[in-house]
Amino acid sequence: MPSNASHWDAVFSAKETKDRSWYQQVPATSLAMLDQCRLTPDARIIDVGAGDSRLPDFLLERGFRDITILDISATAIETIKRRLSNWSHALQFVVSDVLDYEPERRFDAWHDRAAFHFLVTDAQVQRYADLVANAVRPGCHLIIGTFSRTGPKKCSGLDVRQYDQPQLEKVFHDAFALQDVRQETHITPAGQAQDFIFCRFQRRYSDV
Image 1 (cartoon, rainbow, N blue to C red):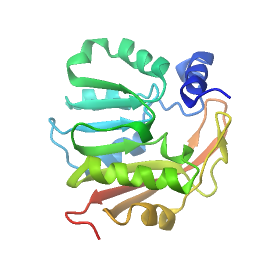
Image 2 (cartoon, rainbow, N blue to C red; image 1 turned 180 degrees about the horizontal axis):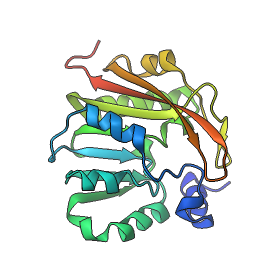
Image 3 (tube, rainbow, N blue to C red; image 1 turned 180 degrees about the vertical axis):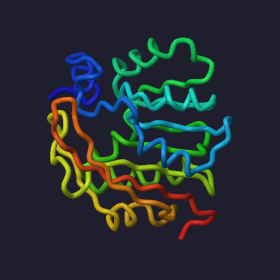
Image 4 (tube, helix red, strand yellow; image 1 turned 120 degrees about the vertical axis):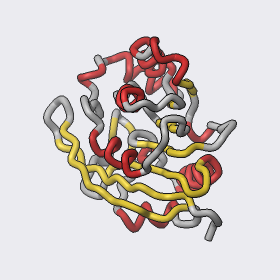
């Protein structure tokens, strides 16, 4: 069986960006939730499971200058590097499985629309929750976009977990307080509907 990295390198090599199921020309819900965070241009933002998302492009247009892009696929990271080659001074690139990631600093906003729902065991989910609790500064923000209870059960040939609001609150409750919830139906380039739930959390100043 191929490693996860090999699987995702093959996925990103197989289709053009605009033909992939998760493609969004404008990541409107993610941007709206990041707007709610009221971040300053020097805020540290990380996009986890970024793939070749357009979110970094919009963040750069909005004046942010400290953006970390993490993905397990080196192929995806190279695509973004080429597209945003003029912005290398504002971007940091990390090729890693998120569960193996060891941040060297803490973030003002952690955004994930693509990685969390692929964590299908309780141990993986707990590892992720512990990771973000340590990686996000007190008072700062976690934005999770994941498949809802009516969303897909598989993506790119892999099993996924579905979530509702109470389940997401339970995962992150020890370190984060829920601030906002939004539902989104994403229409894929092939015309299929995928139901997502987005939650914005704020890091508590002390753990419960």
